[in-house]
Image (cartoon, rainbow, N blue to C red; front, side):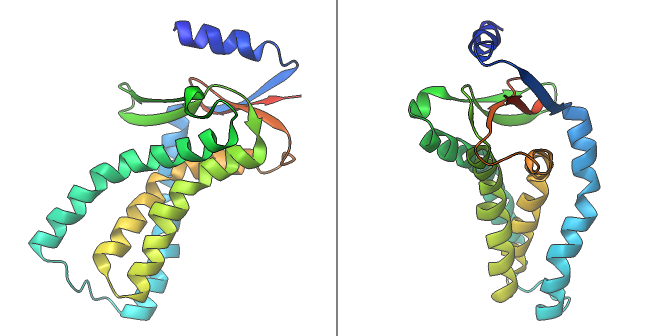
Length: 189
């Protein structure tokens, strides 16, 4: 809580501000609504190229798939942090990682304002690296395990997709602050 007061006092230097946030519950419901569209967008090309085959999905490959998904969740948050740290003079000092016990979700938070382009780049990076690229590789090389990994992490990026949709209308050099408690950002005029 002390950290939130510190963030609030830092933000109070930048006036006026307007929150663009949604609750985690709303984000989860909206993310669930993305499940079918993401499966269709990623699955139809896989089926068109490879048919309905699941190829090498043996018990060992399923175990390996689930084993790499756990570190993938950590890497997802780390990718946000890497981009945001590179955008800040203070680097890693302003990047915070944690776990929301109420919603069972890990998070990455940047405690200082950044430009919209940086916030967006940090937001989209896990989708590209862990979602889209594995979907493409899995489709091209007929690897159902790699495709399912990419599809899973595309779905896991649902909250990021929502945040990107929320920020799309703002100029790329506009300052925003990652919200410390809700999903979204604070627009700094």
